[in-house]
Amino acid sequence: MAWIKTIPFEEATGRLKQLYQRVTGPNNNVDNIMMMHSLRPHSMEGHMAIYKYVLHHANNTIPKWFLECIGTYVSYLNKCNYCFEHHFVGLKRNLKDDERADAIKAAIERHDISSAPLSHQELAALAYAQKLNNQPGEMVEADVAALRDAGYDDGEILEINQVTAYFGYANRTVLGLGCSTDGDIIGLSPNNSADPDDWNHS
Image 1 (cartoon, one colour):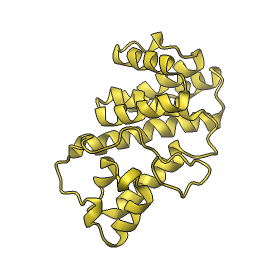
Image 2: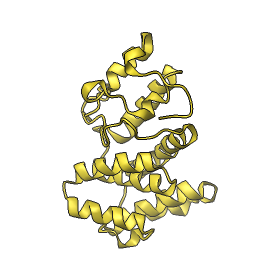
Image 3: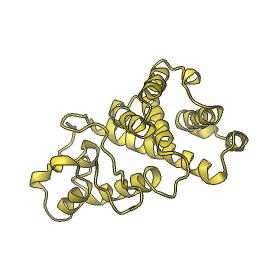
Image 4: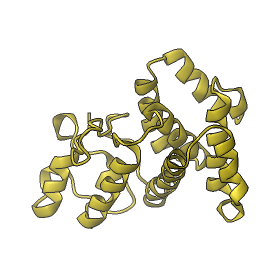
């Protein structure tokens, strides 16, 4: 499951046990990406807080399916199959249009995002995410201006930026520690966006 030692739910004690109980899914399942932090529970707490607030918060105004789409796309760019598989399921569940979701996934996998059934505005967000992920040192103010021109307000631009940045972190956590999907229930997430402190996965 990983290249470093991890502590399973059944063996956890103290603060780690408390955090595991907050992030569990069905049958006390803990996503492997969270288990990567088990030797340093404080970093799991930080990871979950930023994940919940960036991707699963009621004050976001961009639809959750599209925030998941950004995460799916960035994960594919980074060759992080773990996050790609997990968050494509989230995209599909929230979009509630399986045919469209599958077409988006196929376009991503063909490296032809322009052919995805997405609006001009959505494609502009993915172009920003691609550049920020692949060429962060080359970002210029015009990249943000392009998002404004596409119809995003500055708060929404911040959402796009933060989801892109979060997945850079999550992908590197997974890829750098050999995290696999073995034993995971693919696609679980903390879906109670109304309560930022509810980290339970469903």
